[in-house]
Image (cartoon, rainbow, N blue to C red):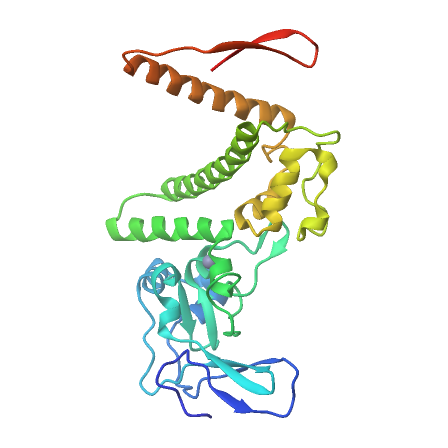
Length: 317
Ligand SMILES: [Zn+2]
């Protein structure tokens, strides 16, 4: 076992023969019999009492004395680089995560206790059923922990955990309250998606761009996902192409929405676009009228222009 650095996540470097990149994880040296921790609880959660769950959700795991935080090693340009797990990885927005001594890895506590076995046909595993033991890229863009907390199922589990904790502490509430919390989380998620779609519509409106294309129906993303700008399908029109570009630029929320939403709930069909444009128009009109009412004087500029059917149309500004 190598010497433990003073700062747990510092990188250490040593010379190595191979130039290839690989990952390994070294287990902690402590192997004392563990009490119920989140790792053992994840496998037997149907046997847990409410008190057990509350204890796991509300208590912070404290490393035993002389505990050596585990690390991952990877080869990088003939150097062995170590990335240590440490207490800083369980602070703030990552406080939902905990280290499991019994499973030698990291779990998400709300997901380990409340997540379904699979989400839309995808079986949940790492951080939920099995420990995360790869510590080389935990936080920041694309980090394991950062990516996990953006999942909708994680938000649902977080809402359930909060409702459960509140119920246990106050002695009030029931399953209805918990379901309401999950429904509220889903509503909030849908609002954020709609906000992004309205931003895309506003973009076209401000630049005077048409939204529709020749073939603007069906799945937005290609089977492989729009990962590169070269994958954009411009035949679907500006609106769909812009959304594909946003997904390809790592808009995780939109990417998940289009990958998981039902075909009748993507909010990007032509009727949905028209409905959203109508909503934007109502809000704009309301704001203009409010401005006029609050102004002492105002002027109207009118002109005429010809539309595509060669009909003269008034243009007011
Ligand atoms: Zn989670």
